[in-house]
Structures are given as C-alpha cells and as structure tokens.
Image 1 (cartoon, rainbow, N blue to C red):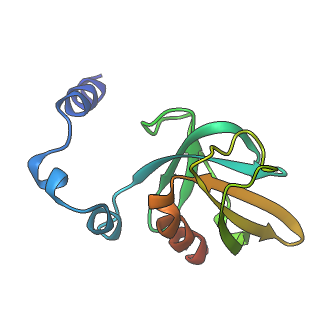
Image 2 (cartoon, helix red, strand yellow):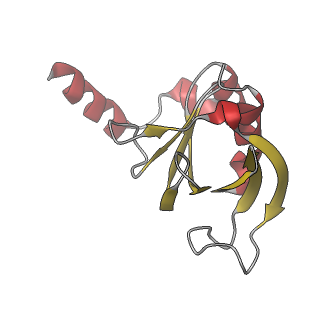
Image 3 (cartoon, rainbow, N blue to C red):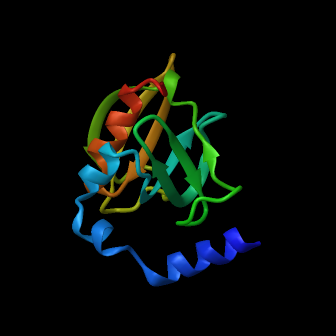
Length: 134
C-alpha cells in the first residue's frame, strides 16, 4: 500500500530535476523505460489492435493501454521479429496507425508485423528489435 502511495506521489510530482535534464538517449542507455504512443499489428502473439502505449527498454518491448506500466502491459516476443523497413504511414495502413507516425515493417518468419510509433522513438524500437530480447 505504501509503495502504491509513493508511486502516485512520485508520478504527480513529475520528473526529478536530474531526469528532466537528461536526454531520452541517456535514460534509455541507463536502462530506463521510454514510453511512446504506438500500436502493434499482426497475427498472435503480436496483435494489439488500436493505439496504445509502447514501453521500451534496452531489451524489451511491451504494449499497454496506459502510459504508466502496470499489470495490463503485455510484453512482446521481440526475439523473433526481424525489422525489414521503416517508412511513413501510407493511406492503406490500418486506422490504428496515426497519420504522423512511422511504421516499422517486421517479419516473424513469413508473417508481417507492423509497429506504428511516434517518429522520435523509431530508432529506440529498432534497437530493441536488434537486441533479440536478450
């Protein structure tokens, strides 16, 4: 209970001065989780229809309906995903991919998987995919 209260208070206070002055790249390299709006589209276990939030660290990618990671965050098996191309959204893409997002086209074997995300986070997601989840 105390942990939950501290978590709420910390979130309400916002980033600490140290965190607010550190770049996302430094936070990412230090093992912190970055959060981006995004979506993952493909066959199971990747299918997460609708826009959500992508939580990414050096070795993991998870999808959650909320910005804050909680029990509803679902880790994705990134070890099997091979990035093929990065592009801007196209008119034929699913509606879950917002107009200003990048699309990372991936393959899991022969199956296509699309990851839509804010352009700023594309390089971070590609790094997670290249880590093979290790």
